[in-house]
Length: 484
Ligand code: FRU
Image (tube, rainbow, N blue to C red):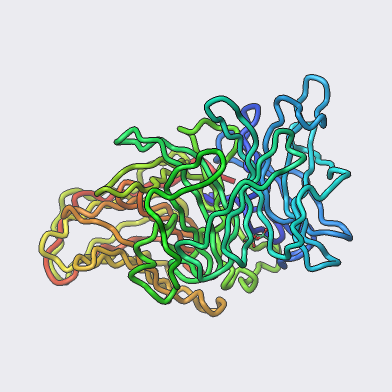
């Protein structure tokens, strides 16, 4: 079991689409090329799972044709059969996707439906549903809005190049009326893509907020693709951030770092959440790559495949120092202990090395006290290394994967930074496999996801910087159940 991350066995994959929990199953559709490893012939691939850990692959759900590629979108269950597309006693699952025209410079929103629980899909005869005459109008996410005395469907999509989220309303999922627009705001250094909107109650204050996720490419915090989020209110018509967020150019690093980022790594993009779960089970999956290099990643000649998903993450909101932040807790397999170190002081120049398994978890709590910081190095048998440096003075974790980028596309050799507090104890929970590392810090309010290139780590080494550090705990575990 070497992978914690879902990927289809073959071919190209990018964004998760139509995430839906329905009748005890999690459905994961995704941008997929049924014919190869290029970003082409975009269709919706399909996998499902009962626990978000083990995934079963299914036939392609929605296929490209002569007229269109099937770009990203979402799925809802039409319980009241407002579309009239359901069968008796069997509500239709309704998918919204972007028709990427092959004949015109045009993106429109279209519908497809399924009456067999999401296995097979029929494109609606009167597509498209919404045509703004725009070449950059995409990524519809449909949610049910419950107001004080009425409830209806709301669709969010983007005018990508204008950096706007556009909101529409419908009572029957078929005819849509424009409600409002949000943006440009926050990071605007690239196209806005794949929006999502959901309500969460702030864990420690009880206040109800709405979270608007907006992916953008390029212009993300680690370079290339990244996802920012806004916290605010949604009154059924308009999204308003709690405090206004001005548009920021990507060159203003201080201002960029003051924004809210879902992930500080290079490889967490286009994340959206599942429909069909209660708000306290809000769960997100993202694509684990970056448009800066995704198309050029090397493929294995025996089983050509490109792209994978992040771990699923349960989302909540928590207020820290007056700022409401998303907290992410990954959904993970059971683990069995591999090694443990407790209460060990490392003198300057010293280090501690313990073995790790190909797929598993590392939990680390280090008291930095007076030290300038510490280093966590993931080392392979061939001495290839990815190093995480904790810098006490800037209170940042710096991930350096330059050493594992050989033979990989330009842009992969890179260093990424994430703010992490020390109390003076720094606590990290790290999930690693042969594909990637996901680092959860500050109680899940800071997350960094990076592909690991050519590294197959077999050990982890902790060393201080300048002064003694004390390892409060270091435990490494192996995942016992496959996620895919
Ligand atoms: C985001 C994205 C979407 C688009 C899809 C095409 O990664 O560019 O905006 O619908 O990928 O595959």
